[in-house]
Each structure stands twice: as C-alpha cells, then as structure tokens.
Length: 196
Image (cartoon, rainbow, N blue to C red):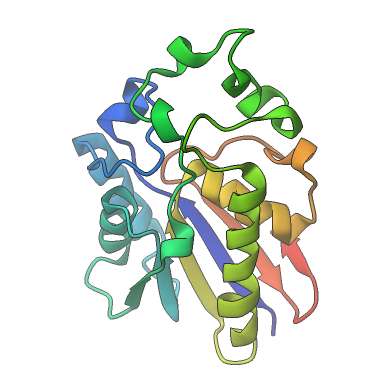
C-alpha cells in the first residue's frame, strides 16, 4: 500500500491579514486561524495518522495541536520545517518591498531570479533542507507508516512539493501558494511521489 503524506499550511495570523512577511518571526494564530484549524481537524477526524511533523514556530505547532484534537497522535517538531527566513525584511508589508529596484520583487513572480534580503535564506537552501527532511525522515517510513501529516508554512511547503514533484526553481510555486489550513495530499509507492 502507498504511504500518504498530508502537507498542511498553518492557520491564519494577524500578519497574514496585514500581508506582512512572517518568515521566522514567531506569530500566534488569530481567532479565525484557530477556528479553521479546528474545522480541518473535524474534517480529518476519521483519518488515522501515524505521526504529525511540525515546524517549531508557534503558528504551525498550534495548528497541528488543534487539528489533532483529542486523538493520540505524536507531534514532532523539526527545525528543518521552519519557514524561509526573509532576513531584514521580516515584519514588512508585502506592498512595501515590491518594486522594480528590490530583488524581493521576484519572490512570487520569477523565483529563479529571487535574491534574498540581507540575512535572508535562498530558495536553494530552503529546498535543500526540505529535501533532506523528506529523504531522511519521511521516505524511510514507507513500510512502517500508512499516513503522515506535516504542518508548516507557505514557502516551506512549496519547497517540499518541489522535491516531491521534481520541479525546478522557476516552477517553485507550482499550482500556487496554499491557503491557510489547506491540505495537499501525496502518495508514495517507495519510489515515486504522486499528488492525489
């Protein structure tokens, strides 16, 4: 039987509503983010998960706890699942940093041209650590786990999907940014990942 992987973006935060770059800043969920996480947990209540892996950042960890609810599922924090760092741009509104003179301008529109801000992380580094996580942590569980959940972040989750779908940097965003509390499901047959 193929192993299933549920990749979920954290619930909404105040900074999401304000279009601020969160990156590695530890921002709590807002009330709507908590409600949507509980709703998703109710939708997934009948599905058995072997483990939940989560970013160490509170918005992802709280989302995972709310999705899990009262079920007895181990939640494992892994630093490789933290969001991409936007360096000195963290906390800035997206509209403030998008202009022709700013290399951040390419983050969503032409990721192959993206240059991180000072102290920020490259997409190559993000993709390297997400691949490392999948190859070393998830794929070896193919014969022992039926279903695993990952709760993390917008760019981080796309880094994982780049590996799973063998996308290059130019196609980093694939089908676009996940919405908050959106689940994307893949199956793994021991060799190939397939989006469900």
